[in-house]
Each structure stands twice: as C-alpha cells, then as structure tokens.
Amino acid sequence: MKILNAAISGTLESSDLVVKVSPYEDGLDVTINSEVYKQFGEQITAVVYETLSAFNITQGQIIVEDKGALDCVIRARMQAAILRSTDSKDIEWEKL
Image 1: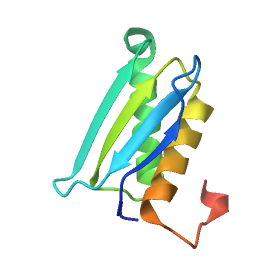
Image 2: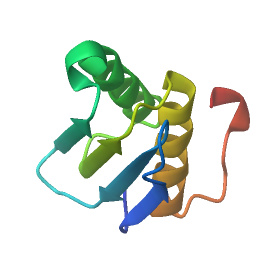
Image 3: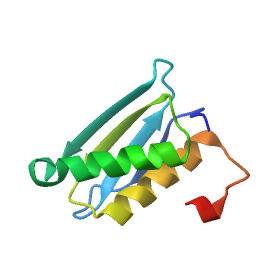
Image 4: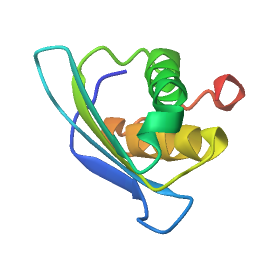
C-alpha cells in the first residue's frame, strides 16, 4: 500500500494516542513522542514498525503522540490512520 494523503486517528486522552500519517517520498520518517518512552519505547517502536510492515508501507511520514496506550490501541490507531490515508477499498480483514 502507499500513503496517498494525510490522515489522523486517535485522541490525546490518557491511555490513547494520536497517529498522523502523510505522504513522504524519501522512505519512512517515523517520530514517536511518548510520556512513557523511557519505560516502553522499544515496545512502542516495535508495534509501530510491525504495523507498517503488515501493510507493506515503505514510504511515509508517521507521527505518534502517545499518552500511555496499550499495544492493541497503538496497532488499532495505526491501522485506522493507514487505511484512511490509502483510500483502500479492498481491505483484507484477516491480515489485521
């Protein structure tokens, strides 16, 4: 999939996060800002990259503003933002 336009998902409530994605032609530019990055930064980063890999995203700007979200929330917000930005009609739900 390719990120075609800017999209956003999530909130800045506690235990949630905001994911912003937009087109970027020079590979992946991932920025993660988190209140709990010192404790869970490696895991947050792993979930973000795993989700990008699941959608075969190799180009785009991804900004994550985390407020202590669980892995399942990170994954869901990433999926929502990616699907919104790609305008994909043929979603393979079993792969999500």
